[in-house]
Length: 358
Image (cartoon, rainbow, N blue to C red; front, side):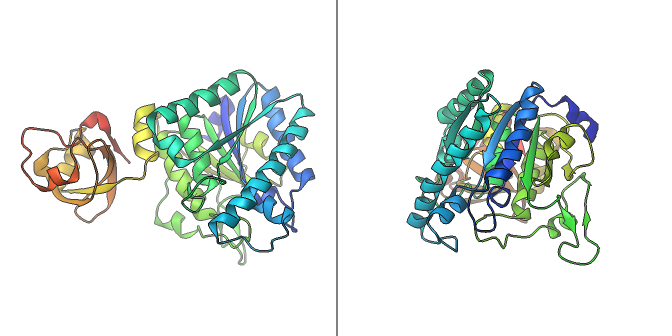
C-alpha cells in the first residue's frame, strides 16, 4: 500500500496524545486544542467521518488539582481522570461548536469491548453517531477502570477503536514527527515508511519520560502491529503541525507511515484476535503449527504438546509454537482440564473459523 492510497480515506480515527493537549504547566492548552479541532473540522467539511481518541484526562486533572507528578495510587488516578475529563469535554464542546459540529463523549472499558454483545453495541453507537454527523470523543472510562487504568494506553485504545469500526486509517498525533532514528542524539532522522515491524524497528521505540503520559513510542509500535494485521494503515505524526492530518490524508510525506497487510480481517476475527485478555496458552508441535498457519486447518488434540493456565470452554487462548512464541489466537471448545486429560478424540479443540493467525 502506498501513501497515495490514503486519499481515499472516508473514515479516520485520530488520537490526540497528552503532550499535545496540555502545556508545560500540565494545564489544558486551549490554543493547541483549537488548532487540532480545526484540523478535524477540515476533514469533516471534506465529507470524512472522524473519531477522536483523546488522552489528557489525567494530565488535565493533575493541573486542576495542582499535582506535579502522575499519581501511583489508583483512587488518585481516578480522581484526576474524573476532574480532567469534565474539563476536556467542556473545551471540546465549545471549540467544535465554532465549526457547527456536535461532539459526544464515549467512555469505554476493556470489558465493554471484550464482551461480544457490549462490543457490538459500542460499535453500533459509534456508527450511529457518525451517521448523524457527530464527532465522537473516545477515552477510557478511567474513573471506573480497576486494573491500573489499563487498556494499557490510549494508543492501544485508538487501535482497538479503529479495528472496532473498522476505520480506513489511524493517525496518532504526538509531540514528535514520527518514529525517529537517533532520537536525542546527533543527526536524528524521521523514518518515513515502515513496511514491516521487525527487531530493528522495535529497538527504536522506548517508553515515556512524561509526568502525565502513558506509553511512549513502544506503545505506538504495538498499536501499529495490530492495525497492520487488520489491514488498517497507521501514521504517527506531530500534533504541533497545523496541517498534519490533511498532509497525511493527502498522501504527503508526513510522519511515519506503517504499511498495512492486504485485506481487512472480518469483524469476528478482529474480536477474537485483539479484544481479549487470553486466559491460557496451547503449545503445539511443528506439524500442527504448519497446518494452522499455512493450510488453514483446525487444531486437533494430537497437535497440542502443552496446555498452560486455567480457562473455560469458549475462552480465547494463545496458540504458541514449541518455543512459546505466540502465532495465533482462538476460541477453545474445551476447558483446560479436559485438554490436559488427553482423552479427547475425533474433535477439534479450536475450529478454524474461531482461529486467527497473528
